[in-house]
Figure 1 (cartoon, rainbow, N blue to C red):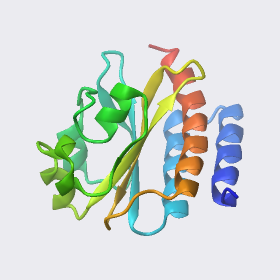
Figure 2 (tube, rainbow, N blue to C red):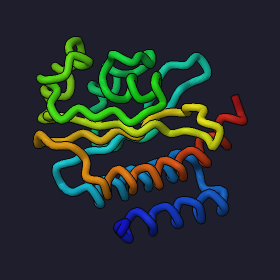
Figure 3 (cartoon, one colour):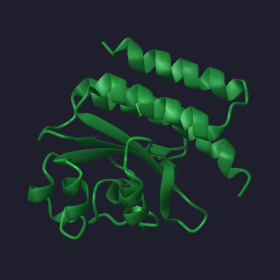
Figure 4 (cartoon, rainbow, N blue to C red):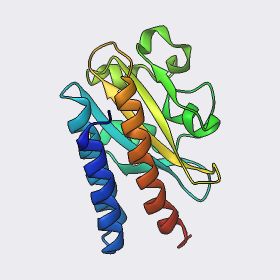
Length: 171
């Protein structure tokens, strides 16, 4: 059974959207809910594709500014990190250990320098499978997401897709 945190956050995000609250506020709320549900060893980040197809920070309140600057504008690629790979493939990408995954060869120094061991990323997609961004979760311990985390973040990513699709209409 899916945690009530995920269900509540999904419904609350849709309510915030209906109230015409800002996309930054709603995405920040979704990030916070995912962190709460996943536990204290996690930090969540939403990256969004810009009009040029590059990943930009959508909401990452617990990641340091220098880390966000270092990854800003990364191009989606199936063999780079988790978020860039998820954005390129449209599929979930799981990296239990940065040291054991060659997709992190050029970037692993960035998350490990701030205490992360692994990560996973869920693409944020429209109903017709267009990738809008990624919902990434960093771990301080070597592990994979639980089935509940995956199902829960998938639900939150669907709420994020609604918000981001509306925001992108202004492009």
